[in-house]
Image (cartoon, one colour):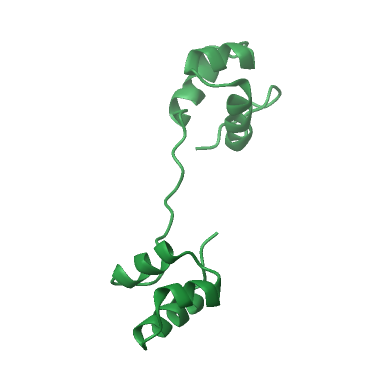
Length: 105
C-alpha cells in the first residue's frame, strides 16, 4: 500500500519547515528511510505500477489450444513450464473452456 499524497506533503512540509526527520518519523508513524526518500525526490506522487507480465504468452496459448484441443491442463502446464493453476487462470481470462471454441484476443 502506498501512502497518500496528502500525507507525503504534510511529512515533507514538516521537515522542510524545520522539523527533524526523526521527529516526523515518530509523529507520523513512518520510517525515517521513507522520509529521506521523499525528501530526495523531485515529485512526491507515487510511481504508477505497470501491468504485470506473466510467463504465458497469450497468443501462444491460444495457438496451443487450437493445435491440441484435447490436451489437459497438466500437459499444457508442462509445455509452458508453469503450474496448472496458471494455465487454468489464463484460459479463463481468455474465455476458453472445454465447451466453447470462441477465443477472445
